[in-house]
Length: 93
Image (tube, rainbow, N blue to C red; front, side):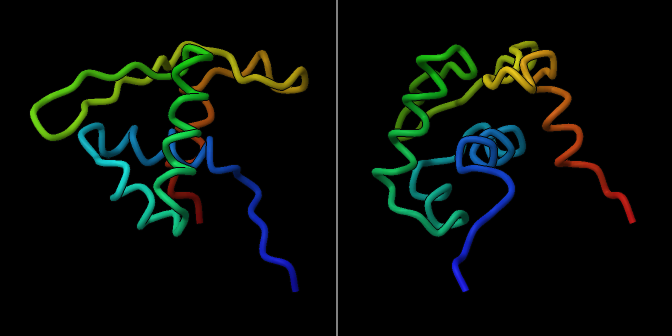
């Protein structure tokens, strides 16, 4: 059976850096089980579209998320990043 997820790597990376703003690409890659180069491309996408900014700090970075940015697709453009991350972080049972 083909492996797939409901949330893309873009969404998963946003979720991870919202909880770990000083993470490294290597840490993200290990958690998502994808290549660091893939993480780098996604981070570049997120930065280019205004979803994140980052600052260099010694050996690492500090990522900041634009929580007021709308999601990209026409069906979800009225949903803010903060709404998505709140949903993904909820502990519903």
